[in-house]
Length: 219
Image (cartoon, rainbow, N blue to C red; front, side, top):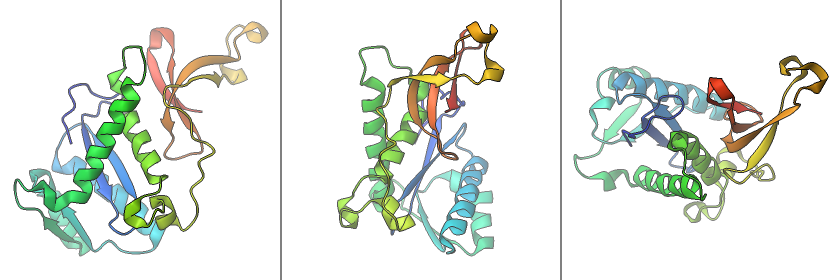
């Protein structure tokens, strides 16, 4: 869905979601435009990750009737032997799994962003989507017998002891090499918890670095 009126910290304005029909595991991607090239780049990344993880080839995908799935996207699918099933125009119910996912994510994002007496930083919408999807994949679903999508895909129980409350105030450790004023310098700085890293065992923290502005780092 998109475009979002306020770009994320990374400049994204569009959300692209993919759901595995069997496990119900879902993935989210963010793009700056709705172009076929950007959508294809996201799917190419997903395909490599999914097929390497499962050892199985993707044979079929269902997409809505958007122009972003034409051109390079559809041509590459033909080369890879992947069948693309397009929904009938103005009938989103034919792609109900993804439509329900988008609705669930959006409702959760609103809750995360506005669950504070302070004015929300709407540039965090992409991090909120990431967090909402992460939590969804780690929660039981009645559509798969009250198992988690994570368990269905990976074959092991999802750990939840690392989960934190969105927006929590945290202290980020400052390595010695980055400390100012030697031994009198601060060893940590305050930040806000905004999610989980996709590529490492770390949390995403929003830190205000003064003149450099706010940035999001993994800690």
